[in-house]
Amino acid sequence: MGEKTMPKRFYQQASYEKQGRIWQVMLDDKALRTPARQVLRLPTEKLAMLLAGEWQAQEDSIKPDQMPLTKLANVAQDHVAPDRGPSAGELMRFAANDVICFRVAQPKRLQELQARKCDPWLDWAEQEFGARLAVTAELRPPDMPLAALENMRNAALKLDAFTLTALLHAVSIVGSAVLGFAMVQNQMDAKTAFDLSRIEEDWQIKQWGEDDEALLRSRNMLDALCSSYQFMQAAKC
Image 1 (tube, one colour):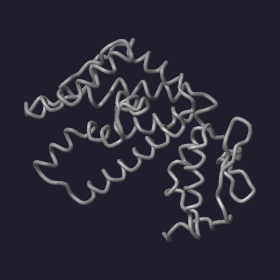
Image 2 (image 1 turned 180 degrees about the horizontal axis):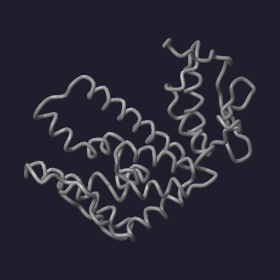
Image 3 (image 1 turned 30 degrees about the horizontal axis):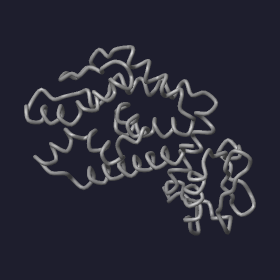
Image 4 (image 1 turned 180 degrees about the vertical axis):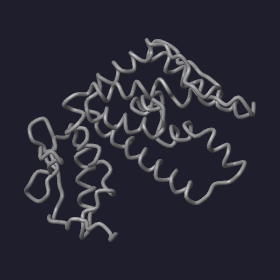
């Protein structure tokens, strides 16, 4: 199959402007619209500036893969904003299988490393959500306290649609609701969250090395996570 043809750049200048209480990205004199054909309505000037930068950086053709922030904004407005319940429920399901709650049985040095790195964040989550998530060295998920899961869901529902979208995207990358919430609350950056989600993988790499395909995949995941972190911070009013 031939390479997919990208749409040509049809505008000269990408900018942003305030309209009432919201911000819009302008492509020449026309407001940017979502795939659902709604005018994209952004909550902050910072987010509008970043999106305008993505569109301005496009060259002869428009490459959506180079505009991760625009993609997150479209999802937030078209899919999350009308009903945040499904996104909050999906986040709760990640919490029930949180990656920082799974520990190896052997070797003991790796198990101790996981505990040393991750337990402080379980302590933090206990303070934030009212109950401590359980840990396990088995393959099946541990029995999680329902109170903690419900409190995480309620915390997600209190977020605006743009922040919630970035949170769920980040959580899907690291496999951890705890790490995602810590990013939202600016308790850690994307690289720290990524490293905490990959303690066992990084241990194995040190033992056996990493092939080029796995290295590229991990770099792409980190780039996507950094985009989510940048988005959630910029969306804060």
